[in-house]
Length: 295
Image (cartoon, rainbow, N blue to C red; front, side, top):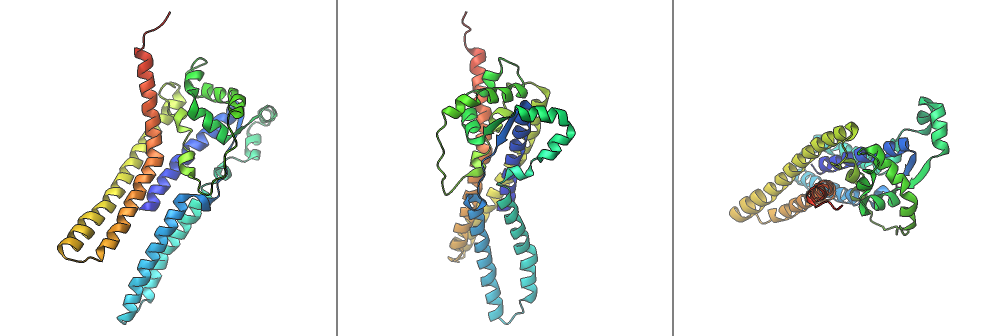
């Protein structure tokens, strides 16, 4: 269940990162994404802890079966096939997902579509550091400044490239922290990609599709949270520990509540920034519409 919630967050990140990369590329900017080592990602660390806890649970169960004289060969096989193998595959996927650049179209594919256009584009390409662009997008109204040109995402891309030299001069070098919340930091493109002030067809279609996906993510993550919370509070704490006196189930409830808290944190770093940005845009739009015009 935790892996499913994390996968949805990663899919959301890849969706906005790839869209802003190709959009800036067509506008003449090469976005250089920040490389984050997978073992520094707290998502990976938490899921490793969860996996070790599950392995400890299976080990205790198998030990009890051995003491009872029950053969555990089939049980071991089921654990390896149904749990360990899928989890190892998912962890490898999660570790590799931090490197978005390996999922992008290679240079030869970019050139072979239209060699002449590619040659001209590469000659005038502007290198864009992700940290600088992210700071610029989050610190000023890039979309509002681009509306003077046109209410389209292409105008926003051009505005990002135009303002890059000034933004770069004002961004200090970033400290290389040991723990890097990559999922939270990499959703910044959503602030401009989902802006309701952009009325071009491409942005409207993407915004509709992304909002449907966002609603699906919210439904799944709230359901997972409710399952963890119900199992921990109603069954382990109330039914087993309180009514039947099985105090050992309190430990299980603590673990489940920790998993529920982790799901809330995933929602906080993925869904909340996107929804908050959309709400902020709507408020600014209403203020602009209701404010008195000055001559």
